[in-house]
Image (cartoon, rainbow, N blue to C red; front, side):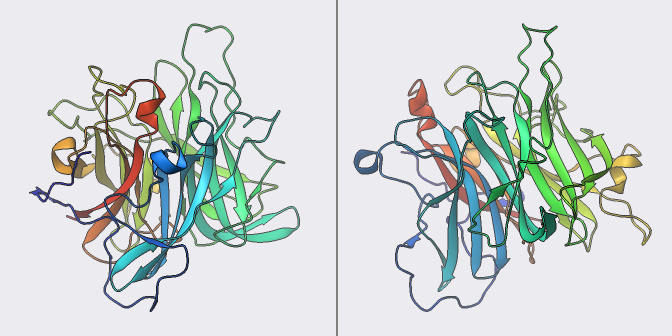
Length: 386
């Protein structure tokens, strides 16, 4: 098992897993069933509990001492069926402790998400659905095929962060992918890996997701009014520009953006993004997840008349500004993938001069087959903001 590296690289600073972002107290005692974060945020013991994987985190820090983490995990040991798990985190004496795991969204048989539910992303707000108002909205990837094609984006709502979570079945899949029968030889991944940011801290949101129709991968970001989920209103959907993003080990431009998570800084009007950094390592397995992650920001338009995300409808060619890369040299792990920005409940960056990042690692490679997947674990690091 590889250990953490005590190094600083450029604007990056690696800290212990889930180090506190702010000073302050916390709970006076450890709640029953909560475990202190260590090298990983949490991890089952495969020798005593069976093989489980943890990846694709979405972390809300609602105050300096509470976090809510949603992530992808299998529900049955040694069985690969993606479900969405949840844990509560509490800070005690400057250290984070995480509670027991619960499964909050799982596949529904004979529906659009029959096989897998994963890639959760959660924000707070006010969302009306089927006669009731909910305080939390989740976007997630669902699919009904075993070949990982035709992924789609669904929505779910809850009144409490721990749930119960209710799938919005009347409108799911919210972002539908139509399989192109005329291209049977194309790998049509579909739509997924969603990210949500609240625009008004009520029902208006930015919704981004990866588009993989086969042959042209990109991220689309749109602004939606989801105040009434039974009658969603789309204001725009635009492809996220790629200018300014390079490959992590060269100055060559990145060929595409995939697997992006977003956060917003209202003061500076910066739209922050973490996404896959290419190229992939095709010499070792797993060869389909990234070695590194890219973090940067796009300056949004200024002025009181501008609304969050207007830069996408009035894009003037401005580049992404690079904050840094999360690389194997930095972390000590050969695979660093499926990252998220740890944000407040509305998708805003947290106070301070550092950007906390949640991400998955593969603690061993070249295990072969599903053994690589079962070595996925979650970690955190901090990035110095420019």
